[in-house]
Amino acid sequence: MDNHLDNPLIYKSNALVEASYRLSLYEQRIVLASIAQVRRDELLTDQQLYIVSAQQIANMAGISVDRAYQHLKTAVERLFRREVTLYEAPNGKGGAKVRLTRWVQEVVYQKDQGTIALRFSQPMIPYLSQLTEQFTKFGMQDVAKMTSAHAIRLYELLCQWRDIGKREVSVEWLREAFQLEGRYERIPDLKRWVIEPAVKQVNEHSPLWCKWDQRKTGRRVSHLIFTFGEKKSVKEQKPKTRTNDQKAKGARFGIPQAVIEANARPGEDYETAALRILEEAKSK
Image (cartoon, rainbow, N blue to C red; front, side):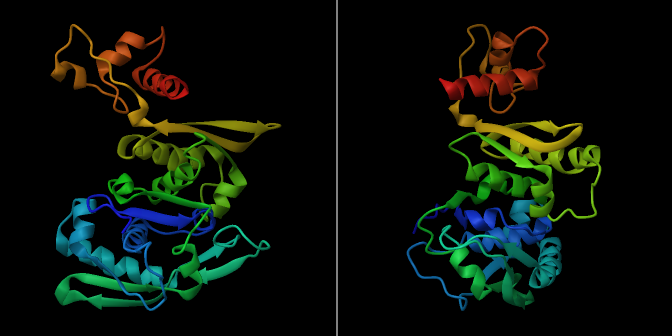
């Protein structure tokens, strides 16, 4: 089995990563916890029942088991009605098609056991199983502490281009993919309520660092540009005059404060300097 016990891996077709859908935070957690159970050494069918426990969600969200179960029950009821629009075949083969389907075909409550269970819909199966190319993978723990569904979506989009470290998307495409129609129509609102919180959570909770910029077409902001990389790519330097406790204090993106101070340029704040150091380390 390809999953790690402490950080089960999630595999999604790139077509599913780029699909148009909207899920709440707890709906995302249910879907990801279920996908993490998909075995890569077995053929998946729509008869497979995936069980998600309130204890799992409680551990992930840092809440009580009783409260987690209520979130589970409410979220899975909404998930049962959620639609997803797919634009490509699972492995990118064949002509482009627009497929409108649902995530799940059945949900089961097991209150006495503190669990819910679901079966994925048949059209979803090829996007989760037997993926040979054009798929994205990441660890469940990479997103476990995120409290924004937008942050989880953004992280998936970054992971898809992980080897490149840069991704540019049109604002129109992002609105469609995140199904933001009628919400945050002003660019400042989109930045404040979607982009900035999502980037912040990717930086705080995932193995990636990320920063973003915008590109205009005429006077209109038309594209968003995300630059990102692995935090672990930075080689920690040991300052000669600092203790380990002092070195760890004020760290940004895994870089000790002392290292940032030693390499910061005039006028840079800690975060800007840390992101620059990460980029420079990646390019070496």
